[in-house]
Image (cartoon, rainbow, N blue to C red; front, side, top):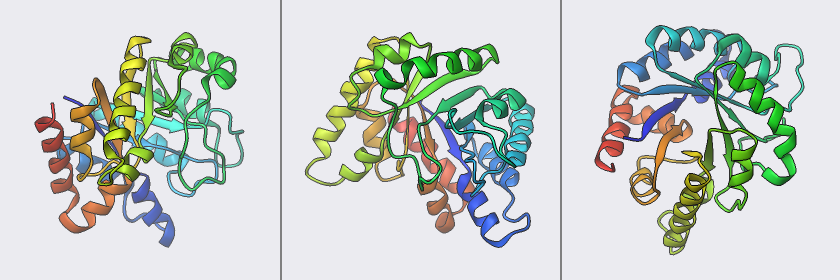
Length: 251
C-alpha cells in the first residue's frame, strides 16, 4: 500500500497567526498517527512562517517514540540565520527517516517546481552524501517532465518526490488523461533509473485515487494543505481514515 505521510505545516500556520501554543502541532501529529497515518512531514522554512525549529525537534521526539517515519523537507542551500540553523543541521539534530530536498526560495508561498538535475546535480551530491551518512533516506523534489532522473540517481538519491501541482490542476478537466500519462511515464522512468517514487502537492480526497491507481510504484504521498482543510469539516481522525481507505482501495 502507498504510505500516507501527513504534513502538519498548516497547523503551525493557524498557531502562528494568533501566537501562543494552540493549536498544538505535536497534538495534531499524534492524532494523525493514532488514526493510522504512516508518518509525519514538515517543511520548515528560514522565516519560520509556520513550522519552527523547536517544532522540528518536538516532532522528532514524537516520531521516534512512535516508531514511525519522519520526513523533513527543505532547501539545503538556504543559509542559516537566527532561529533557523539550516536544513542539514536540523537533519543532524533529529535524524529523520527521510530528508526531502526542495529548491524553493525564501519568498515562495509554497513549493512549485522540482530540481534541474543537470544544473544542480553536482551541488546536490555532497549534501546527499552527508544526509545519507546521518542515516536519512534522501528524496529529491522533481517535475514530471524531467528527463534526468538518471542524474538524480547518480548523485546518490534514493527517491524522487513528484511535484503533483500540475496533476491536481488538470484533474477534472479535459487535460486530465494527458496529465496522468505524463506522471505515469515519469514514474516508470524514475523506477528504471533505480529510484523510489514519492508524490505530493495539492493531492486531495478528490484526486488521490486516480493518481495512485494510474501512476505505478508510488511508495508514499505527502499531503497537508487539502487534508487539513478537509479536516475542518469532518475532523482530523475521520479525514485520515478516509485517506487510508482511498489508498487501500487503490492498491
